[in-house]
Picture 1 (cartoon, helix red, strand yellow):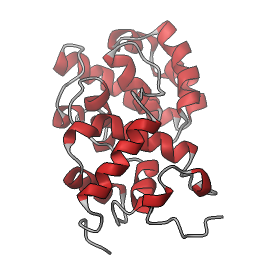
Picture 2 (cartoon, helix red, strand yellow):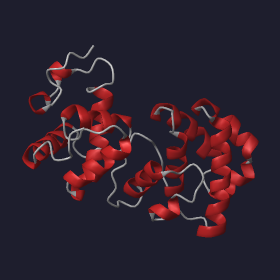
Picture 3 (cartoon, helix red, strand yellow):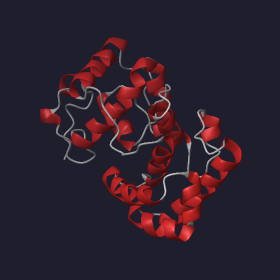
Amino acid sequence: MKSYDDMDRESILKIVKIFSRLYPHPTPTLKWTSPFECLIAVILSAQCTDKKVNLVTRKLFGKANTPGKILILGQKKLAGIIKPCGLFNGKSRNIIATCEILIKNFNGKIPQTQPELETLPGVGPKTAQVILAQIWNKPAFPVDTHIHRVANRLGICTTKTPEQTEKCLKSKIPSRYWHDLHLQMIFHGRETCKARRPSCHDCPLANLCDSKNNNFQ
């Protein structure tokens, strides 16, 4: 494995600027209107597309969009509503338990620190960082499979896990870029640098890409 210092800072900042031009003012694709709705949507998004989550939450939040209302709805009805998101039994249990903790420990409010967020069932380090970035606009760089793939193909990092990639990106990119770059790299991974058949010939980053000579099929 190469060190985190493989790509020079100047090249990395060029990539960051290109992402800024490609995806100016990026906004999350998950739809929500309150911190609580954001939390629930992110929990539901595990192994599910944002498009499907948005369809489910439109129905769910029309019925219950606060911790108290979710508890009144109950786990059985909740599971039935969120079933299209997959893993609905586990997700419904976690959401009910999360609502109970929010009411008991946080007066129904969403915590603003990562340790507190991670006390909520269904909220791990990545989910907590998404909440911190999207709700509270705090410096965070949650890394999913898209970001992990894009960062390694570009040569910014040469890492084996998303956790290693997160450390790499945070060590090499100034925090003022994290909020937007997190979304920009996700969009690029979904639209251009796909896991299979990436559109390398149409990629504006090709000249800076460490994988430009790879024969992706």
